[in-house]
Length: 167
Image (tube, rainbow, N blue to C red; front, side, top):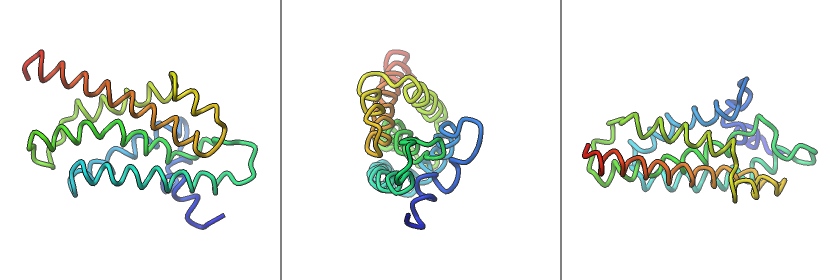
């Protein structure tokens, strides 16, 4: 196994935090996403998400190796990628509105976190299909799908809040 596989797969060892390592991984992803957003807005967050997906796919495969456990709890890089997918609509909205990158409108970030955790645990439709693949790609994809579902809900909530309610 590469010396980089475990730090990447566990998001620099956050995955060893207990209980609920997936929740810890998702929570740790938010301040990093925020710093990425501040540094380069949504284009950089999208690029970072793609990079984390592919690095996570490789690191997950290397970390689990020949293990019978296809998705050990310490592997949380998939939560990072999925959480960032859920946060992309928030970053895009801030960028399109011309909001100062240091602004942290907490409802968007917080709702993205809770909605992502909901869909990651629930695993509806394609998220469940990906989880049942029992391989490193499935480990990554189930969280990407959960992030997409959460991102759609974040967009709906933003439309409700900023559109219908006029805020």
